[in-house]
Length: 179
Image (cartoon, rainbow, N blue to C red):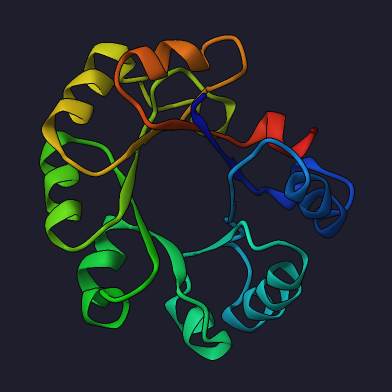
């Protein structure tokens, strides 16, 4: 079986905290709290509540929230990982978003424990971005020694194709928020 990562988007569900409770008892292995449009204070307050609901939570984007809450699981865009490397290098989980093999290799060198490679398929989340496809995903997976999670347009139908391309797991937003 492969790993499944839920990516949150409170605009896709009725009550995000209730959705986190559902995801906590589901077959999702991790829940990335990706509410990057919140202020740092709002995000930290939401993160505090979310962490109490599930040990599967990985914070996103806000290193300060991790420090405030003494929480050592974060997912970052590569540019933030570059800037905050010294602050997050000893975290239990440090994920990075990548869009090329060079970025995947850089994230690995910076201490990322996994990367998300995207977009694999067309997605409503980023309609103007051309999907990179399964061949590209396979090259990313072969190019690094850390786990790669496929992201972008992933659903229960095409997830297995990503695993066959070498991904450790898949990330889902829409289906996770309506689970």
